[in-house]
Length: 221
Image (cartoon, rainbow, N blue to C red; front, side, top):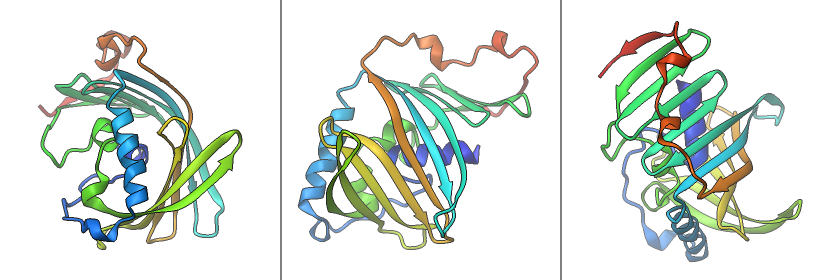
């Protein structure tokens, strides 16, 4: 479960359990806010999102410790994440977390409180309360022009001290995220492909018992 939440963190550049600390707008870079607002506004225009991503963990010296891939699909309040032997299904009411290694599925009600992390919330304007941010500039990555925003958490007790968000200038979408932990490890996520506004059947977001006939169910609802 922890691995999935780390990925959700990177997908939206936030962390589960963030305190809703008030930010001082005067300390933020107006140019960075324009870009972040554009990313949030663009995401809200998508009826569906299907994306593939790579996930990399490095130590403080920059040595790669692991590299994995995953996928995410979103539609309204519904989502499905597949990553490193885990699958999370959410139909907007219920959340199923399937662990392939243990062959078990944990079932919970979706908590719609403000403190709950979902992929949809992580793509919207989380930054206004949780971070101080500044625009570092732009650079070319392959054939893309990338805008980099440096983000510092308002709450200094958090386990990380810096986030670098890279945005595709042409599409106003997140290209990659890099989180620097206080302990030294670095976590990064890069979008390898993304399709939007395509038809997604609602059954994609519901755990189908028939496809996992021997899975043990742990119902916490």
